[in-house]
Length: 152
Image (cartoon, rainbow, N blue to C red; front, side):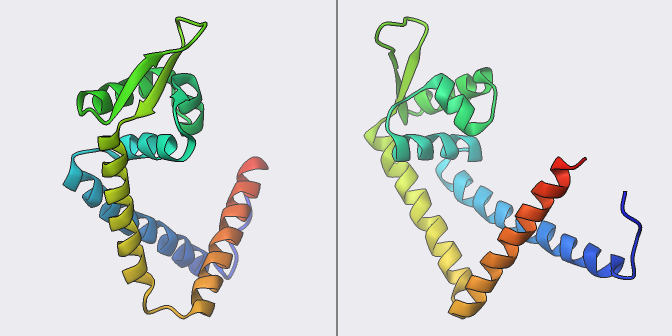
């Protein structure tokens, strides 16, 4: 573990700023999802289908970094809401293909539009240079956290 330095206070403040920002963004996003009666995971699944077309449940599980049983539960709830449908895979009865319904696509697009509007309003007071700088700093932080985590 690295020794504490004279910059420990600044490190902690920067870290706290990132975490607090994450919490504020997450809270706002969860509010958007709740308005339409879905969860963050359900929206993620709908987004995968919008962006990739019909998917095998196994591939959806891999893309979402969750277990297949987790995806089964997510898809069950989306299917109950008629936002997706299951179809058997051709040639392999065990394979199930998930496809989005028109209602699912419409819901996803409504939430995405609201999210985009929220982000645009939040960034409206930033200059172009400030937005580029923010993105650059966040990317650098992500890289360094990933690097230091892989060194453990």
